[in-house]
Image (tube, helix red, strand yellow):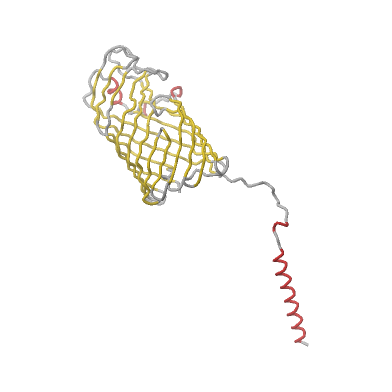
Length: 347
């Protein structure tokens, strides 16, 4: 009796197991209706393999070797004028921050803040050299804040929007009274293509003060990684570089950057030349040809060393923001520069 009972249980178990296998084989998820018919949209990202690291916070110090500040009368000054003063050292602190505000696959928004200083150690200033006297007494300072938006449109195309506002001048902090009517505004817009993880390309236009005065010009973005060792990073005409990767933690860059601002100046001695001592603009623009080395010290901390030539593009004193002819033109030669900095980078 027990044997018959056990045999019956075993047969029932086999039948149930075979029915379960058959049910699993015939089960199909496609037989069920979707709970949500919304199609999931994919977007391209802003990353290119082996690109130089995105710096969240950077603190650096910039040194420029000695040069002569050679000043001559410009087209807006009818009086003949010339004065030369030696600058022993031009140096200053630079702080840059890039904070993510929104980070989604559909949009990335970063807030940017920066503060740059430029001190001029001037000795033996001639009595006729008002600009050298002013720069020797008070450093040039630039404080900027802005937004950068990366907006992917689909898996291939994207747009980039950039806007910032800057207060530039020669002042000490204890006497600084911001005049927002002197604020400088810059902006850019680009439309681009993400071809693959090694290449992106974009074209657009910008309003910029990199030339020392306001310019409205076309721009091009191009990032290309050729292999594990070589690549290029371009944002023309602002900067461009050939990249040599030694590893994911170390790289060299060979290239240039166009740096420039327009600074509001007050209290520049005119030495009887007839131009106003206030409401002046110093148009400062320079091309920095450089070799730059980035090296990871830890997962998030990097060191950056730069060395190269500072080539003067514009260093002119104008009467107001809209002037196109200079009161005083200045030649500052091609001195060497060196910069050392530390950064917190995006993982």
